[in-house]
Image (cartoon, rainbow, N blue to C red; front, side, top):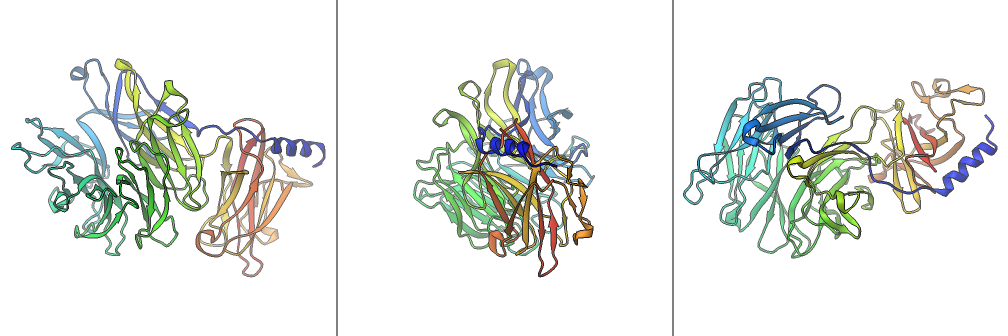
Length: 538
């Protein structure tokens, strides 16, 4: 193929760059007389390879007592209703509590007295209550008003079955309760006795090597710093307390499993300020030592959700998503989700509300993982700011995390090692960056690129099998019009990682280009190739 004037035109287009737009909303559910009041991830209900959503909804706002409400299972891929039934206020996925092969759910149910509320564990298959528990006595009534902050589908006692943790949250009574698969109380953590108030609870993987899950409790505490308490799932003992960095930070208003940000083999955790705190702080703590890995004193309204442990730019390090509320988050921004890089702490992108007429308050936020057709993960949130009277309250929005114009990613990666390399794309101040992660450490990497439509290179047709060139099972998927050599990192966060910066940003329309990494280590014979990553520029 000639690389004359047509290639020069492409290069000119690249250098001109393009305007950044918001992340792609892959679907939105709003209106229809529905009141969406809760969402949680619910596994792959329909077997299409995408995580689905357990949603609590009133589907007739005008006359809820006549037609009621209950649960809907929503397709994570399309938002379509996969299942619907009448029930109470669904709160959390609980895992397969009755061992019938179907995930079950926990819900709150009001009792005969105003402040009588029970946590009900419900079989999805039969819609029957498997067990229920009331909270402790409170102001002379039968049960305490549980909060909607619960975490299920975590194994606290090592029996291989899912258990449940629930909290009460009040300045006069605040405790953490752990229940086993049968609804038997395993232990109670008297948070209020320490002078604290529990705000929320989040599951964590095993952090102390006893084979059982742990969990985090975010708390208000007397110093005003706020606290994240790491609790042993097996015993209920406090393993560590991580405080906010400054008085007034009030961290613990939002907490999450951040994934292994420092790449030391153990999950880390993140916390952000309570909504009424005078300061705004977001911190990632090491799961192994409790040391601060990253922190931001960024503008945060404190009323949005937060999720971690998802690699939104495919650079091999999990990132953090934080929601801001439905009033002015920044000048001209009326609610947003902000993505922070786990690798370097920079802001990767902002998913902003379109304007004052379309504000968002993203809470809760849930991770839906990777869906078929793209390696970039998807998240969803309930927008509680949305209000259209009897036409609809709240809405559910699903967003894919790739940059607009970045994708599709196709083809099969290949490696001589046990892990497959991945190619990703993100923004940097000078334009954009194409990365490789999980490659052979210390190897030579070649970023190759060319027009996405090009199907040959000289006399060679694409895809080109690389077996004759010492890379058995691998293929070149992109015409190597441009070749940029780099050396992959050997230690720390950069182990198996490399990047090439480009002087433009992707755009939803324009010239379609494609890139791929081909990696080889002449010293060890290790090799790898990534998938093919297309992107468009103007």
